[in-house]
Length: 172
Image (cartoon, rainbow, N blue to C red):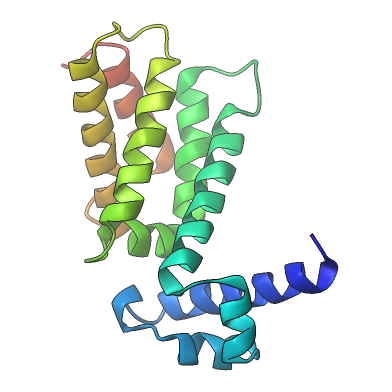
């Protein structure tokens, strides 16, 4: 990718992140994005069809980073991976809150559920069963939603321990 294109797209994404920290996605306009990014509307539309394509690209990048963070080190336990994973989510809490809890977040939630389902299928401790995967995926999504919304006040380590117990089949 051309450096200028990369710089422009980064500026537009940073503008979106800035706005997401201040307002709901539904209230963000392309005009507001271009003003903060200091690019023209034409430049925005040269790179994105609309703000939905932009949020889709941004959310895909966050999921990719989340995957890299949690699956990077090979010699750590599932619980340690979950701590890394939740720490990343906590570090980017405002963005994940907007992506997961927002009124129009169903697209990200669907991607996040697919990501969770795929991750759980790589956990050899979970019996191969679509019902198990769906139950755990939706449960973890609910925990992450509560975590980023501030309803769950536990540290990433405590939440990771609880999720690990659930994914190990210790539902007690």
